[in-house]
Length: 246
Length: 287
Image (cartoon, rainbow over all chains, first blue to last red; front, side):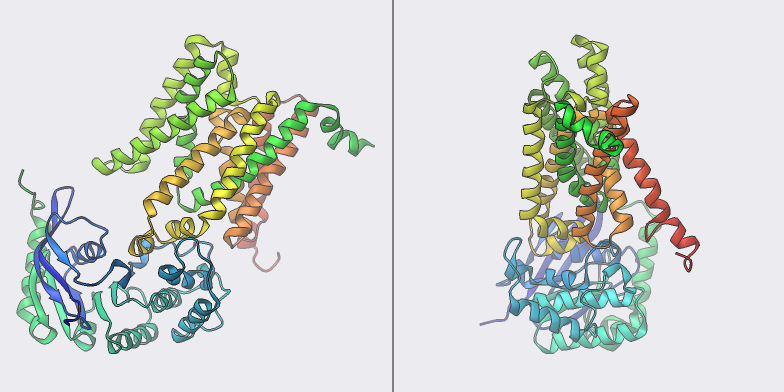
């Protein structure tokens, strides 16, 4: 039996009739480690949101084969989460048990122990009772990674996971990403740092609203492709947004 | 004896004072925790707008019942509040306007419409009651109504606490686990409307949100965990009611505004003396 993969078929996404993503086709193979790279405004996060089912497609389709929505774990951009919400580290991590506990069931002792292990795996053992507002940006990102560990998802979708994070934390979190990938999980991450992409991600989707290149990183992240992406993004920024017909 | 005469005697002697006190405690238990969640969702002003949005429905209830009837006005208020909440959501999803802008437009129209409807049939006194409340006129029926809403709110919050917190803290996460965030958002707005309607008779449409937001702001200044914030908010709302009623009784002041001003005074004190208040920030080593 073929491993499930995620297939994008001519995916276009629009905000208020302005195209943000145009005609993207390709596959995230099962167990692959893919970066989505491109200039600001390239539609990278928009594509992730569509992948998670948060945005409706203007046209095209996303096929997830035998995967279920619960097989996806998602890390949104840090700005989308209220870091000063009055929650403890332990409570935040235990949200990752949602697929088992749901909205109403109690947290089992086994789940609580898994949460504890997840915290230790990200280097935050002993932080359980700390308030999340008292954590640094890097520590908070570690907490969110612990939540993802607890989710135990087959596909992990990360939106700019290293923005404003210190180098040591970035190194530790990249190691976790590699461990997830070694376990056979599919990883899809939006990244800004092209060096990070080249060093750690074997496959890359380079986009500027539409696909510039999608494949092995060494053939995707070439100087000419990056120039093309920049030029397309600059053109898009200086022109009127592309409107949908009708 | 003087302390007894000041603090206890009014409630022993007068049934209307006892009913008003029970109503304040019930309002605190319901509105306090709801206010904390409303504030954490950065929807404080939406709560204010919603409190005005219930007015046309309450006014129509007033017309149908032929006077100040809390059940009739409450039901009308709930329907009007929900209609405005849903219309505002619809406008923000189908136009370029954000939800707060559409709320503001709807609540101004609602306030004007409500005042117009009451003034068609009622007297200026009725209009004052609708706008500023009459907590001392709460009868047993109204008390059951307010108590029922407080009990229902506490029960619903206990049942949906986890998804509400998740939706409030990280809505993207709840969507990713198919946690039905929209359902809990609407359920929460329903609780907001319900508690505003409960506060309606006591504090009127213009101040009903006061016992929701001021105690919630105070709680945020003193506590760092959500359950403690909710408990402080409920206690502060009830305490403001107690002190407000005593002060208004002895000084012959309007009770609704006095209750809100007591909460406002506690808010000012908290701004100065709470752990995250101004004094601690200005003089970190001395306090």
